[in-house]
Image 1 (spheres, rainbow, N blue to C red):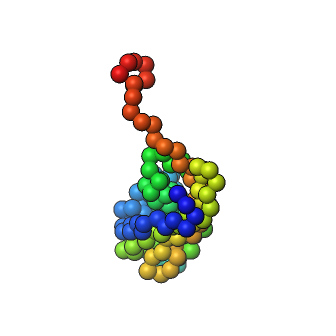
Image 2: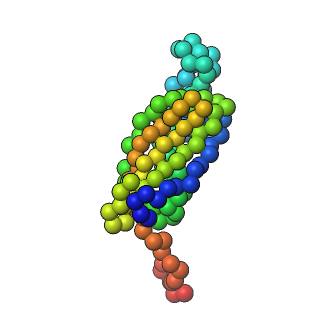
Image 3: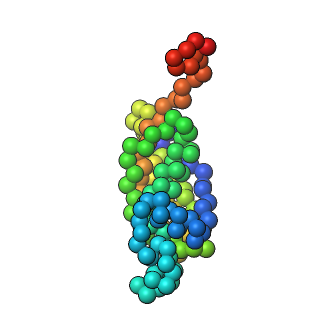
Length: 139
């Protein structure tokens, strides 16, 4: 991991199911995340993704790249353009800073309207444990 390394793009289809299930999983029962009529009454063209789902997707993007030894230390994001059903969000990232086994990654997630999410993720990466004797017994 080196400053300037780019993470491969991750394309995420933004489906109605993803939006609703993300809101339910994060216990965000605001009607704008599951009820299209209520969202329209509040000025939105449709339901839209909540920040907790976006936060989880950003974290997944970084840990998928760095592997099983990756531990998220900090996720700092800001939302911009909403993610509506039918959108596609493309996440991109680059390593901005490295100190020992810890990196700061700049992440951007864009959809057809613009930048949905921008921010930084601090991640520590340790080598996964190698095989050997299992805990509590001989190999």
